[in-house]
Image (cartoon, rainbow, N blue to C red; front, side, top):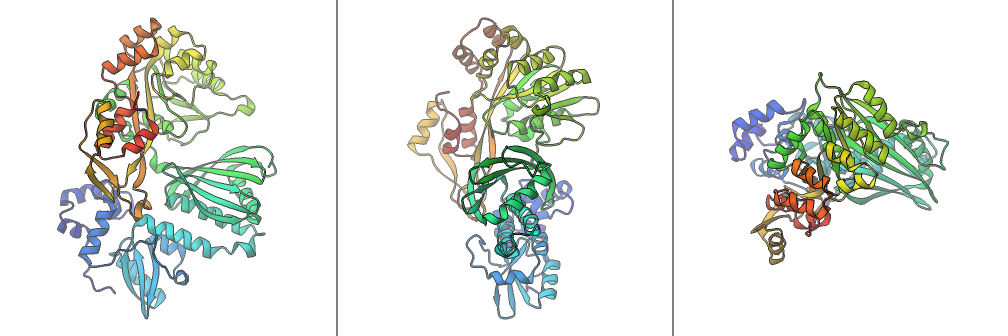
Amino acid sequence: MPVQKRKKLGDLLKESGLITEFQIVEALEQKKDNQKLGDALVEQGYITEKQLLDVLEIQLKLQSVSLYQYPIDQTLIELVSKDFARSNLLLPVRKENARLIVAMHDPLDFFAIEDLELSTGYSVQPVIAAKDDILQTINRLYDSNDVNVEDIAGEDAPAVRIFDQLLETGVAMHASDIHLDQQETTVTVRYRVDGVLRNDRTLPKSLMSSLVARIKILAGLNITETRLPQDGRISTVVIDKKINLRVATLPTVFGEKVVIRILDMSNVFNKVADIGLQEDTLKAYQQLIEQPSGLILITGPTGSGKSSTLYGSINELNSPNINIITVEDPVEFQLEGINQVQVNSAIGLTFATGLRSILRQDPNIIMVGEIRDRETAEISIRASLTGHLVFSTLHTNSAIEAIPRLFDMGVEPYLVVSSLSGVMAQRLVKTVCKDCAETRKASPIEKEIFERRHQTIEEVTVGKGCDRCRHTGYRGRMAIHELIVVDDSVKQLMMEQASMQKIKQHVKDKGVRFLIDDGLEKVRQGKTTIEEVLRVASLDE
């Protein structure tokens, strides 16, 4: 057994002055079933993972390692099953005579240490590593060791195993998408993490047909159809998380390309407060969605988090005495207590036809996945004028552009004016990694950018790069917003057919915070960087 005394993690953290007894009690009350205290404290924002590992390293006098760069003895993984390694978040990395050096997320897990010593016959010496670092390394090492694909490429079993491995790696990396790209002789596997695609591995071409067949069977697709694109969905559990997968296949010259969108049910916003709105914007948006009727639009390009905001909104309004019905393409997250309709154009179930049927189902609140044409727009607007609260999305660059977009679709201006309650535009920006964040003085250029928006800044926060963020300086994403409440003064301008520039100036004078301003405010708060904000928003708004 290790020589350190059996101290409790809570005591170590209190001794270090990072948290109080009250915070520990709060974290224990809010933590999920079977969740360890350290994970709960990090998830609830009381401490960062780096602070947790630093305390363990100093207090227990243990070494901290980065598995991302560590020279691991890969023969040692035969000593521990993948399930045991993953459930206990540990990995043997080195052997020194009769001593086994084991990277652990929780070096105070003495039960796991005892099990390991009994099963291997070695004396275990823990070293500390980050949770994601361990999970990703487990997937990488066991995947390459688990399947000798060249020898068994003709069998079905490898396809099952490899698909499971691809999902486990994706969830461990917090990826939003998995890409399987067929080349002439190989298949490239890529993961999109924080909006950026990363190459992960290559698979032999001979394996792809059985892998695609496996995916198609699970997604309910036609396995014999390889000449046309197909879309399907899978619900499964990966690393103890309930996951929904959206599967899309596309025929290419080298074979079918497959993209799998990972929809983590634990990431669905339960409340509007979780969306990341500034306090004044949050208050205004909550007042909007609490109205009994009206049309509320969320705008932005594909992949800007519009669906998450919609789900957060209707989740907040969800109660047994309210009938909420959605018509979506596709249904991304299945929400309890909400009636969700999946568009199916092949059989004539479009947004417009779905909406007509919904209106005969006595709804209070309707969510239309996207307004794509005049028919859908008109039915949505008329529904909002007959006592329904209607949510939907539009693909526009700013909130104000939603108004001319509806006009361009051929909707009568008086209908738009009467129905539209508010429009919120949003974009996603990468957040600074909390574990390697540091502040520095703002440069003259950065100060000038803030001055152009009539703001000032003295310090900015940047990530210097660490193992937890793969040395990118960013970890995770957040939204920046722009909310326009269509009040009587805006409606009057719309009725007068005022130019969009005039309406924009009017809402600006009333204090609306545009995307660029919200982004810069979040830079000031140390949450993101100027580079990220300028990537998605214009200084000239």
